Length: 239
Image (cartoon, rainbow, N blue to C red; front, side, top):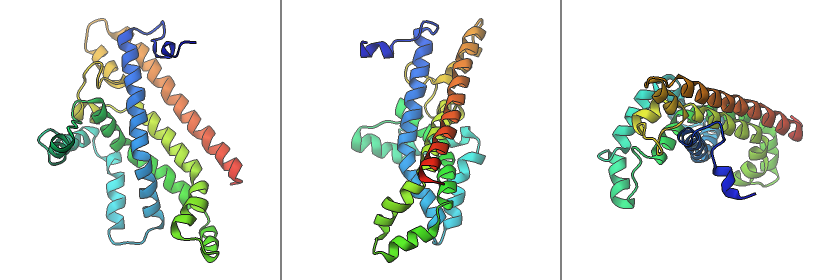
């Protein structure tokens, strides 16, 4: 089969509708790939670390869960906008512009999904017996060796589950994306934004219903896959 056939829209979706689905998958994938390593480090620091300001870090990590997504998007706009302190540096030094781009949509999605990843990974890490790490230490393993050979494999179910949950959540992010990246067809218009746009035009109910069904199916598939991965990993690890 020609590989380009996989990029062709299904017969029951128009090219514009498929474009929204494709952008959603790209944004969710990028946000998960970007946020996952940071989520692992944050979960480890919050679970194993003992340092001043730990409670503050914990609150900052969970902040996107309780803040309105529009406020998060507005904050990103202030920081990473063309005139923002970080956005101007990226523009001047590297020629990178995040606002109103697919990369910006991925950043906004990553910020909103980050607490979900940290929570899943932290719960898995807290289920790891510290005695195993202590035993490795007595055998001469250093901190990095202990993390890579003992801790990381045992927390793998949480990492994989958190990644899938974040991916599924990223497919449905709306407020932060539309505030920071806008609703640009072919660039930042993800599935939720395309559904919203369809509801704003006369006769768009059929399109909104179709895209809502796609969004619902992807979300359910992501949650089921997360549970399946977590169970199989626990079984492999004898947990």
